[in-house]
Image 1 (cartoon, rainbow, N blue to C red):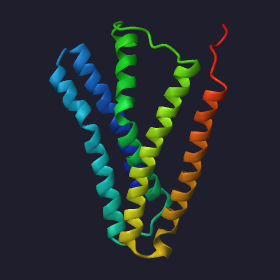
Image 2 (image 1 turned 90 degrees about the vertical axis):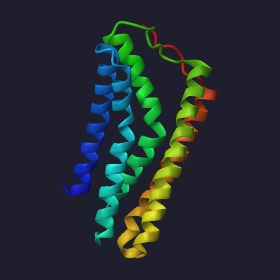
Image 3 (image 1 turned 120 degrees about the vertical axis):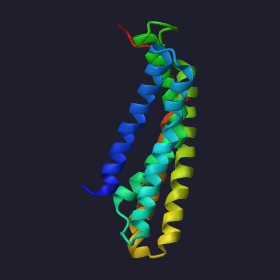
Image 4 (image 1 turned 30 degrees about the vertical axis):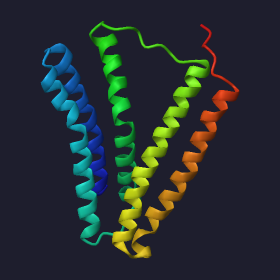
Length: 180
């Protein structure tokens, strides 16, 4: 594996480590400002990945699928980051701290709206990540070195359309409750 792949893995691990540190500091040690500081480090992790990826391409590397995944990761991290932190916060409070209300599995129209909201977050991720891919393609200015970036953008676009189609089906056929 190359440097970019390892950086993506390190950033994903780092993302969850700073969230966990933030939650532990916030709720276990009752240091809310320090906990918020750790949670605020998540965008810094994204900037590190962006810098490493841009530097690699700037130094003449041919774009690979890993470079494209870095852009997808960045877009997804920015678009879904806040909701992932909220999700972790809610689960930590209930399951670890034994506080708050038990997270409830969404069903029916509530789940359909939640799924559609996720699809719109996916669209935002696509706009951000796609913008990064377009920027990389523009700055590389060599189609033979950036072909994989264009392919990734097309595949991601198809996945986005499928995501919206699935979300819309939940309005037609709402998700029921699980029988025990």
